[in-house]
Length: 97
Image (cartoon, rainbow, N blue to C red; front, side):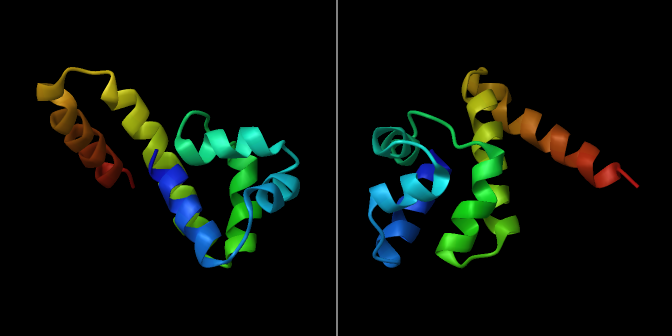
């Protein structure tokens, strides 16, 4: 849902319509609308297109896209271990050479 909120804000800031974004992504407008609402997930291949349209760093948008995927996974876990699981994963990432 993080990505959906972000792209809605960016779209509105740039004065773009959902149909313009959906055309650029080669999907129909209802599908794009679902992405903004968090009911569907954007494909990784769509991230560079959106970053270019919104004139933002692709890495920033890709980071939000990936964070959304992580939150989807941990959202289904038990509440008391969510933070511990994320901390563990972060420690593993930091330990990589």
